[in-house]
Length: 302
Image 1 (cartoon, one colour):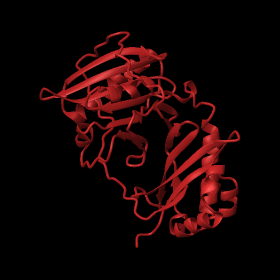
Image 2 (spheres, helix red, strand yellow; image 1 turned 180 degrees about the vertical axis):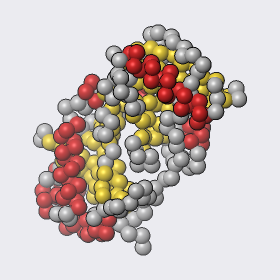
Image 3 (tube, rainbow, N blue to C red; image 1 turned 90 degrees about the vertical axis):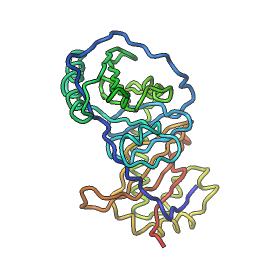
């Protein structure tokens, strides 16, 4: 399906995904286990830049455009001005961690050192508890943060080839879905699809930018071609032409039942922190290849 978007507003969300805090001395509890929650049949989110994958909780969506390099996971619309607003409404943040030494000792040193000291500075509290454990072959840490007697953060840190953090106010069952499933791309069921997805996205975006409707249409999925004509596709591309000379980036996307959906971020060139315009693209696996299934492009406001 091809459609135009006449007004895609960008949500400005203030978020500090990693704000760390240090305990006077690190507290270790080995082999910590959380009660598992069902995750079968859920869609998966693939972060291209940081190469990690996790299941998306039911009725939740992933926003990878509000904060570059991170994702916000929430249910329904969230109007928020501060990070606490997001967490108070059940929102969750994920972000890669910059850990140089991926050994168990290196991970514990990072958590007890730089991560926790930053957290203490940013949240202005020493009321922190840390539990270390191991799950799915990777070291992890669970951090509970309180301020003035009230819990303000629950943070899950995963070590491994691609370390990552999961952050919320409390450890809910929704949080546990991500906590249980976040893993390195190389250990996931998408390890053999990532390169093909990237290549298909790149090819389709190049055709979109060049407004090559015939080539885009002929390479699309059978479903798209049965629902949309080449002329309709050409009209959509022309309507969005003022945006197609901008930079178009894809941070990652959601995979479910041989379908992959991702947000497109349009930003003017030579701008440091521009407010992006958003679009969307969906790919469908057909005949062993990832093909264009759906496309949403921005158009100038009337």
